[in-house]
Every structure is written in C-alpha cells, then in structure tokens.
Image (cartoon, rainbow, N blue to C red):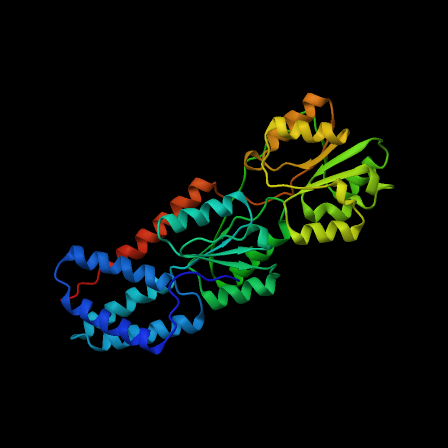
Length: 344
C-alpha cells in the first residue's frame, strides 16, 4: 500500500495547523475568501488516509471550533466538516476506466482511494491513495466500514464477476452508494462464442494448430488442460511478476510467454500472430478500450479461427462519462453544504 499527500506526522505540525486555522477562521472578511478556505479544508480533510490521522484532524477542528463565538456557528461548522469527512471516494479499478477516473480525481483535486489487485495496476498520483492486494467480500466490507466513503465506484473488468459481486454485497451491507462502470462490447460476427472455459477447452482439444491466447492471467490454468499445451499455446498477458511466476509454475515455456502492455494496434497484433504461426486466437470481448476490434481485425486478416469467451451477464451500469458527472455532482453538493457557513 502506498500513501500520498496530507499525512500529519508530529505534534508540532498539529499545533501549527491549529494556530494557522484559528488565525484564518478569525480573519475571514469576504465570501470569496471563505469559499477558497472551504475548498482548502475539503482538500485537507479528503486527503487523510487513516483512521488515526482522521481522528487527529477531528481533534484539531474541535479545538478550532471551541474558539468560535456562537453555538450556531459551531453547529454549522460541525455539520459541514461531517459532510467533508464523508466525501471520500473508493475506486475499485485495475482497468482503463479505473485509471482514467483516478487521474480525473487527481487533476480536479478530488481525493480518492484506488484499489487494485496487483502492483501492475498501481498508480502514483497526487491525492490518490493506492491500495494493492486482492480483497474478498469480508475485506471489502472492512475497508468500507473503516473509510466510510460517500461513494464507491466499481470499475473492475467486465469479466471480474466475483469481484463485482463482492463489491455490490459489501456496499449493500454497509449502506454505501455504489455505481458500476459498464463497457461497451464489440462486434463478435465471425467469432465462435463460448459461455464457459470448460466449453472452450473441449472445443480446442478437438482442433489442431498453434493457439494464441490473449485472455489475461486468470485464464492461464485453463489452457493446461490441453494436451501438449506447453508446445501449442502462446500466452499474452500484462507484464507482472505474479503472472510470470504463475505461468512458469504451470509449465508454460518462457519462450511462449508474451508480457506486454496493451492495447495493441491491428498491425502489431498481426505481426505477433504471424510470428508464432498461430491458427487460432482465443480472447475475450474486452471492448474498445481493450483493443478488441484490433485483435479481431488482425485475426481476420490472417484467416485465424477466433474463439471468444463470452462476457458474463452483468447488471446495468453507467458509462465512464456518466461516472465522472456523478463525481462532479457529489463535489458540488459538498461545496454547497459548506457554503451555508458564514464566519464573522
């Protein structure tokens, strides 16, 4: 796990923060200055990463509020600070959509926690805390209870059905708002669709020829069920130590492993398929952001058979653009609540 921004380290820094905030609160003169101060406070509060830091910040704000002159002002300040504390976002990513949302949050100074399964998908961005590691349902629930986010964004892969179901269940149990990012599919005309891995392997076992598998690391064990898979299958996946180790332990030849970042152009896909002498392409319906059309086009250029693992059925969701709009609405809602305070 990596942490960025806003981590209070010493009692001296806390004390200085109290003094600065007290002076600022006492010296506000105009609505514009107040508005700017609120934005600063939202950034500071949103960038807190742990319960301990959050607790310390609450103590600081309690001391500041204790110096206020009226009960009304104090009550309003507590109300707004509660809203600000609750305005956290948690993004479950490891996908193009997840990365784009995290980058948007960072660029617009909106703090968020970004969860990915492996180091391959980790990000280093201002105001974004990256948590690396696979979480089961209990782990996700514990994270939500600890962080108390206002919004959870499920931007996991369309084929990561178990992860998505765990996120959905954890949000329901904790009463957390959730939005699911959905990805448009591509044209599957001319492809053989298979609803399960077992069905796919059964078909491949009756076919001959070199197989170019572009399904992702999780499907690697599936291909070991084929006779002579070490000679017959070339496997392409994201470059990760975890993936490389898994494939080598399964018995794949190092010379048959291709670890590269996608998506790939039609020309590059065609060159790879040709280089290994593939006659069958096995892939997923990854959509435009996953370079699906370029893979299919290259396979068609070479006359390859295309075996496609069909997408699992998933619930209706929102597009990337709609998700970003929801984040904007959330931010303006918090700022509007903050705007109710008038510090004399």
